[in-house]
Image 1 (cartoon, rainbow, N blue to C red):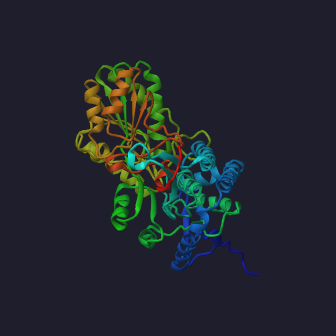
Image 2: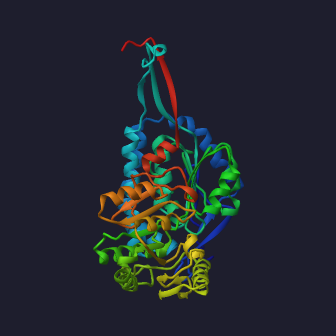
Image 3: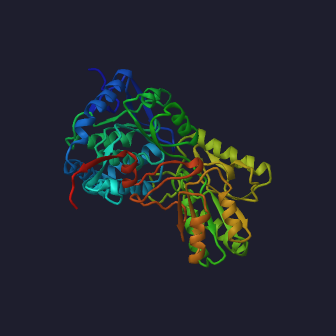
Length: 481
């Protein structure tokens, strides 16, 4: 009898599971062992997915709102029922500690639930036109119509919830969606495909295509996919804009988020704990992980030792251990890059207060100070467990340092002074200011996105729904008000 060889996990082409022309190995970031293999679709399969999305677009946008809402709610419920399995899958492919994977699943549950709620109430409005003499007897009906099928390009760091933030809003507005998951972490997206297939949505409404990045060009350039929702690196994001200049592109790119300790803040233990945790959660692989810590000079001598102590207390190791808070980076190449940036900073005068060493794909949680403002650990997104501490002389100096960046996603401002809070909202060049906490806070229903090099457009369920649609106006004549 021949030995049994398991087939790769199927991709999803127009809502149906299929094997591909090739297979892609998914490796566990912590120890490099093979977790699974997945089917990589060939050109014919990609073409069929695009053609199916284009063909079903008109039918799907006319699907009643309650049908779309019930499908989204069913996905939310199923994710909740399979939460333990899905969290284990995220940890296996991504390497994030299990505690953070469980939180990601719960957030995805909420993301689909929010989308189900918004699908029922997302509508247009009436506008009276008799505000001018020429509009007497006329009224405008303003409605939202899908721009067309959405290409959703997702990153590795949140392999479920950042897919959800593209899929759920698209389905809520009646737009077919094709997901290109990160090559390192396709399992969560494929599992979501299983769940979507159970909803009874029309064939062609979704596809999950784990094509390699180098083979993504056909998807990006195809005119039948007029909307691209991308989360990932700045370099890749702007290259997508150049490759598809006439498409509607929503991008959430990188950042080097700042947390500012203002002169009035007194609970330094709390600030140190929050910054330590959210500078190192996901091993720092979050666009809004704390990277730059800007502390007022009046607080620095007391705060910095507390921060170092809080970071040192974080447990690192095997991400499947429920006690572990900091796991590996996505792969050893990225860990080497982070180590290199740390060494480059120390070569030009930075001091290592904690950490700085690498073992395989794991980098010790690191705290640096005296870092020149030209060093990469300050100017670029490190996407690793590294905190860079800088001292500021007053609030104005702190805000100036925070703005000294080509990025602008979110910033955290530790203050109880209402005037300072409003000043931060006015002065900081970011998409979101979190007052009294780290920049890493994100509610899945709120608008989320950046300015400058951090992208364009907004995520957050309703915000994404607005981005995926366009206003269309019908003017009625002969109306008696």
